[in-house]
Image 1 (tube, chains in turn brown, cyan):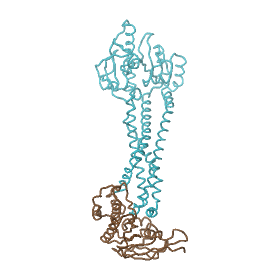
Image 2: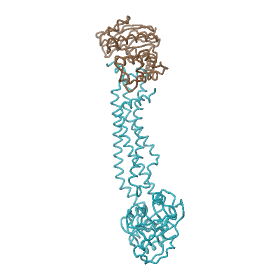
Image 3: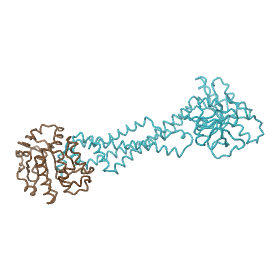
Image 4: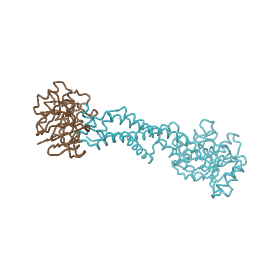
Length: 213
Length: 410
């Protein structure tokens, strides 16, 4: 089992808490997290990435209890084993496309894949030395996927990766995410309310906000 | 990829703001470097030239002017003194040694000093070429003068009256170079030295058209030359025999003779005190520039931090630790200040060089633009301090940034 989440609860305020459904994920499997906006989908994703600590519950990734990790251990674990993709690409503008990919193995302290090879897989090899500002939205999002893949993570977490893309680019990004996750044998979790993604991934959980306790 | 490379990329990314901050800082540090260089060298030069001279005696007038003209040969002499009084002073039991000087001529602005061999021995001269004079109208040339005017042993030239260039010349008798001195870094480098008789005779010939009957061959090599009552000297440099002299001698000279006595140490200390106001002002300006530069760097880093919160959050999300982000910002701030500091040091030397080029006379001539002081390392350290100070708050802010909040804000 790659990922197990049990009895997760989170609260932003004292008397309000969000309860999340339990779920499991195998390597190579894909899962959607659905829910209305404000329901706590992204909160769940952040907890899985170790960016937020749940109020209670358990998360184990690759057999490790990540809630017990210290901040530094979590940073390192995330760097090595988790690839994150956001709604916006958030590439580092002063760095070239290639350098944006090269920082990943540096901070993750891994060997890392070859940037050129990954960019080739994502069909943007010609942009390897480009400036980030010259990329189109779709290209930038594909570079951010390449960045998430650089360390061959065990788990890929994507937060609304297609919401700012047109149909053509959205299709492409979903396909790439699924294919690449399968190629490296990683689990893929996508937070979305995008109908275009629901057509490609069948397994899903739904997050609902409980009105006060 | 490493932290240094990333911070360098971020600095390149904002060339204008980076450039402005570097420039501000480097100007401030350049002024400080320049002050440091000038003050240090000026003080060394000034104290080296006056070392061993306890008292300067000359015609009444400004004591500072007497010191400047008699020891450093920069100002005009205060006037002449009768030789009788000089001889009287030499006999005083409180006086250990007297170096007599007859000033008042120049060659292309280089001062000619009529004196004796004691003066040469006092400054411990070494010869590049030739030897000291033995006859009238023979001169020994200081290293700087020789280089500037291209004089060597055997050359001859005509002196002019006065101590600045362009006055009418004594064309009846040429002076012959018999020796060229090694550079010593002292005032003597800038002088043309000869016997007192040479100076006397040059003026005689001009004034009375050869009616004076003097023996051109003989000159006095040590002590004050014998001259009739009408002969004059310009300045005497005295050494005391004992500490008692420091108390009694100046008072005696100032009240009992037509001459005045001035202490080089005292007068130069007074001069530095006067100059000190200007130096303080410049220092203040330099510090203001540096503080502004420090603030500029702080503001630039702090502002860029706002734009970079996403970037920092992304770096955290790919495994950068908080400490690495702290380092990243610190490296940026310190790189900025180091470039500014190195540029500032270089500019300080260049500014001084340009300044010296445009005023190559007097004491300024003995100041070098390309010597390096150990204190300049302090400037680097100081700049590092400014860099640390300016980047510590932004760095800590970067350290504390919550990534989850940043990344989920869209």
